Image (tube, rainbow, N blue to C red; front, side):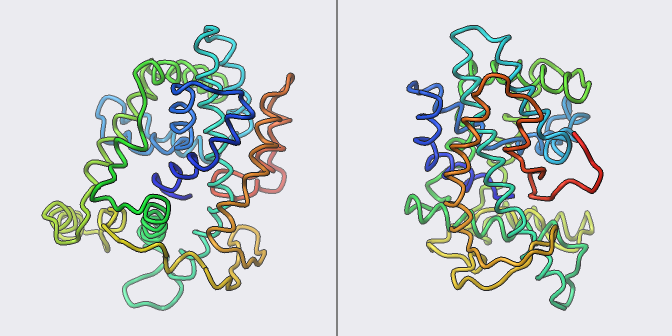
Length: 321
C-alpha cells in the first residue's frame, strides 16, 4: 500500500538482489524492473482516459483476486515473447513481485494507522474518510523516503518522469504480457495498448498531483472543487499531492516501535516502517528463485503470496486458488 515514490526507491534498493537472481545486465531490464515495482497501481488512473475508462476495475481485480494465478500467467506469457524480449519481460515481472512484497508487508501497517485515526474521535473524521486518511499516511511516508534516499523534494524530483520511465518497446512488451494474463486469469479481452494507456494516464495523474506547496493555485482550485462542487467531506487531491517537505522522518514511521495491530489478522506488531521496508530483501530472493524455477505455477506462487493479497489481507476461510 505504499505510494509511487516509495515503490520507486524500494526498487532501486532491491535491484542488485533482483539483477543477481535474473542475471540481468542491460539498462532496458533495469527500467522494466523499476516499472514493474509500481505493480498494478497505474491501472487506478484509467479514469483519466475516456477510451479506457471502462477497464478501471482491473486495478481492484489485480490487487485482490487470483494473485497467484496472475503471477503464474505472467510467467507463461514469457513463452510468447522473442528471445530478445524475454529478459525484459522477466525483469518486469520480478519488479511486479517486488511490488507485492512491499505492499503486502506495509499494507497492514498503513491500514492500522488509517483505522486508528478514523476511530480517534476527531470531529469531522470517521470511517467514511478512510481513503483520504490512507492517502495522507502514504503521502507523508513517500515524502520521508524521497528526502531520506535522495535529499530531494518534489520541487526537483518529478515522479511522472523518474518513477514511470519506460521506452515504447518496454511498454509494448508489457502490453502483450498483460493481454495474455488478463485473458487467461479473468477471461478479459482488453485493448492491445491497455497497459501503456494505464502508464500514460498515471503519468498524467502524477503531473496533476505535482503541487509542492499548499498555496499553489492548482492545489487550492482542486481542493475547492472537491469540497464545494463535488461536496466531498475532505480533499483527496490535497491528501495525495506531495509537499516539498525537507524531512527524513514521518509521524507515521513508528520510529519508537510502538505496538500496532494488523486490522486483517488482529496480530500485534512493533515493527517500524523501515523495519518492514528492509525486512523484505531475504523474502524477495526466495520469491525470485521460486518464480524462475521450472514448473512454476499458481500453486507454487503461494510461497510468494502466503495466501495474502496486495493489501496484506489473508484469503477468507474456505477461499481457494
